[in-house]
Length: 197
Image (tube, rainbow, N blue to C red; front, side):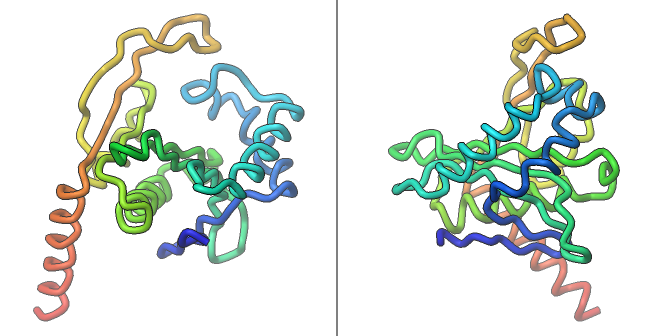
């Protein structure tokens, strides 16, 4: 339904199931993950409620929320979760976000997942613009967005109170469908040129 699951080179994005919550709880309480992403470590009750809400939203029509598990193809291990949401049906605006287990950081998974979410949003959902936000100190996340052609549009100063007791800046990145299409065609052209040489 709606093009789910979404298959990439190394991962598959599928709908969350209730049985996923214990794995998600492992990284939802990890200080390395929560430091720059969540306001505080999540309790088991919060994680269960999150997954239950995601499953319920997956059945809605028209569907607005896509809370998806990130599963590594090589061993079927759940390594994170991601979200695509239609923020405005009329203006065709969507947002997205991604959480990964620390042991798979800096291996290119975030960049791959970001690319899959953009493809899904533009090709399957027919969105015109997609955006994502991250903590200004989370430079690896920002780079993953930039590698997929998204550009930084704004910095919201001291917009989030983190668990360290300080307010943090949030950076917003976005890309339009035309920009994504042009970039995709350009990259395909380069790939074909490389193969022919």
